[in-house]
View 1 (cartoon, protein in one colour):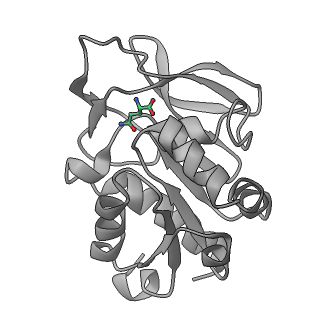
View 2: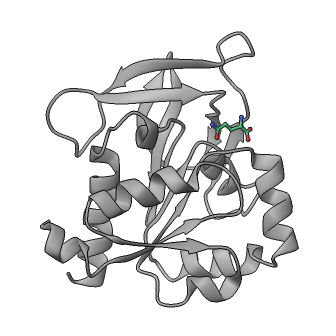
Length: 194
Ligand code: GLN
């Protein structure tokens, strides 16, 4: 996809808490139009949505405060691509927004292992392994049969897809790793016919 084509894509980034700024910047570097989402009206006219990493309890409170839970579910139900990273992956699971048929375990890699980097092979991404930076990361503890596991670390799923929803437990946006966002944008472009 060319930068020119990406420029026609409006991608929302949930901007209540967490590292939404780094996602917006990476999306802009890739040529997309990034829009910060703080209230339900901000979801209007978006082609795709990113739920960033951060702190899932604080993010849940923000979503409740702004009345965003049902509008976010509704957005995902339209079939528009949604990309959740780390706390964003947690927000999409059964125990939070219920968009994905997963249950995540928070801070799953243990308190001692607060952060680490691991090279990951992801289907659809060519070239060297993805530089996956994990920060107090979750993993997917349970997944329904409609969930496709894309990558695991030590046997624990850390990347998955269910229909229009892509989730990863790591932070490409702080590692200068653009290829997962490019994969997401390609999905958005395909759906939006760009
Ligand atoms: N540990 C955080 C949580 O449970 C998620 C970490 C992250 O997004 N980097 O909310």
